[in-house]
Length: 318
Image (cartoon, rainbow, N blue to C red):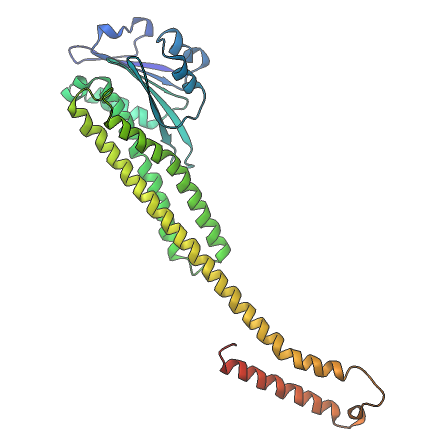
């Protein structure tokens, strides 16, 4: 589906004009959104807009790293949207010209809809129409980055809950959850760090910054990404600490178990020796024909076991 939005020179909004009637020179600026386009609609990037073949190729081959490429008078941006439920990455491509912006995304995204509505509702705001397509690019980036926070907050909530119930679950289950959280943090990091680098380049790029005012808006997004990066590193350190704590706890438990088993084995070693000696059944063993021999051996074995257990306990081994 392709939808269009045109801002007239009198700051009015005209929506859903056919592309054939949408001439950028007749409007203050325009926005064309390719929302889940078909193959035929995707070909319009070349046949109608005549964008650079490399940029079109990046749109067709998902998923690219967030980046900024400059082709003559068109800036091509690759952005990432993140789905909260499964942290699935969705690519958003922007073609930014002097008086138009073209957005391209393979799936429907609420962030794009929100940015679209904000442009329509605030079109009479001078900051919207004066900055032109840069305003739409900013709104899209702002919505995409704002949606990163709930993803990270959800992981932090799980971390806090995991830390609280650490004493009630087995170490194996806790370790599995810790590694799952680290995997999700790594997935977020692969998006947020490149987005941070992209915004740093935008803030310091003279191709997009035609006015000093633009810097403040994109710097605000960059600050959000810096905060997100710091949160990810802190959460990764926390998961690493939890992982090390669980490994140490598991090692201590194993050592305690092995020590207990070793003590028990040590206690039974002399008892097994005595039982083995009197189990050889030689004919001339004197104790075999003693009336109280059996009970005496059992008594010696019991006293020996009790004495060894008491001695080990006194030494703190039991």
